[in-house]
Length: 99
Image (cartoon, rainbow, N blue to C red):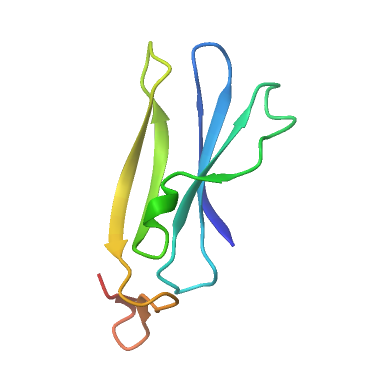
């Protein structure tokens, strides 16, 4: 499942979109990904994990924003440690997350 899409436009017109992939509801394995479009959003590159070296160690939820006047992006959000791959972060008894 993919959640939390956010797009930004760089000065030369390229659109960048970030989103999180998660293996299932309640699983602590959010993987931030990014795609690019140079034709106004008609076609997109294949998704790439933003920080592949953190997969299965850190679960990140966030979004991108363009930094005005630059070709730079800012990613902001929260990160949760992954103790065991596939672990659940939602607890029904408290109707909330473990973090």
